[in-house]
Amino acid sequence: MKPKPTTDLTEKRNFYKELLSLAIPIGLQNLLVVLIGASDALMLGRLTQDAVSAVSLANQIAFVMSLFSGAVVGGGGALLAQYWGKGDRAMVKNLFSMLLKWAFGISFIFFALAMFVPEALMRLYTPDPALIQIGASYLRAVSVSYLFSGMTQCYFLVMKLEGKASKSVVISVVTLVVDVTIDYFLIYGKAGMPKLGANGSAYSTVVMELVALVWCVAESYRGENVRPDGKSLRWFSAAITKDLFKIALPMLGSSLAWGVGFSMHSLIMGHLGSDATAAASIASIAQELITCVCKGISAGAGIMVGKLLGQELFDQAKTYGKRFCHISFWVGGIHMLLLGVLGPIVAEYFVLSATAKQYLIIMLIFSAFLCLCLFHQHHHRLRCFSGRRRC
Image (cartoon, rainbow, N blue to C red; front, side):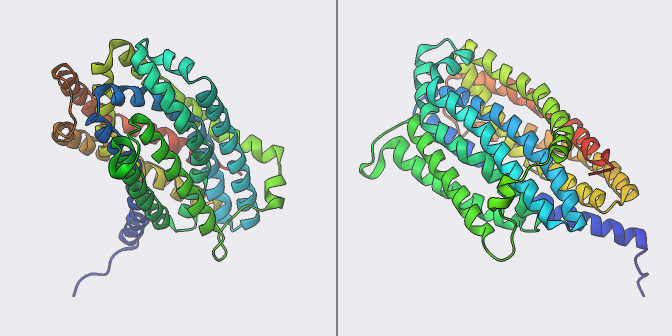
């Protein structure tokens, strides 16, 4: 007769079961987001190397925007998880509406910059007139998508809290198919469609983000799902806003610390020319493809710890925090090895000049070591969550 599992063993099994139920859908969602960028880069790479370079630099604007909106959504997620754990649905709705307003406000600022001064933004990253021209045109076309993306992330966050993370994955899969399909017809001008090059990629992004947001809104009106209404959209609390920024600002500082450096890296590559920019873009995509599981674990950890804090199970939250730190270290090491092995295979799908390929090999080697350091960011986020004792 097999011995019955101990209480500790059962608790660990439940822990890993819950973590995987969150990390796998979130990791798949991150993978799908990266695949959208990878498919754009692959198609544009078959067109011209300048198109890949220009779009890569232009997308730094969306990247910087994601640092701000990600901090707000991440900080709000910590609060939402706590109130969800308490069963306070009214406050969850109010917080959700507040996050939507903040996300839209941030998106609108970047939309206005990309729409009205795209040339100035591109000049920050490159002096090459050809890249500036392609990138500025792309930014004007893609800027509308910024208005949708931040709010969509808010809806995805609530879906995860409601235990419907798989639904967000389905939405991401469908929108990925939409994006790739429109890319194919508009970038290359197939089936009588105009050949728009980089702008074709921008228009497909706008359609993709719009479809995702409309689907999320429609989904929120099914059953008893959390959704904003007139009352919650007018709701305001100075105390809750202060609580939000207590969490969001450290997360923003952490994100900006590496994010601005990452963006500066693109700026330096842009001033080195199209070869360096294209290689850096592909190396970044390869790294993002490999590290999706790590990001899924990080997001899942935040939700699990947040729920425990909401239930005032502080000792268990502390235990979970330590366990997550150990897991993230080993996951970072595995990801480093995967990038070292699979990175060169990913690179073969792109058409580059000899100089760009040489740059890419060197960048992939250093990116593999960078993967091992990702757990530091994960550790910092856990400290932001588990260090919070009160709502």
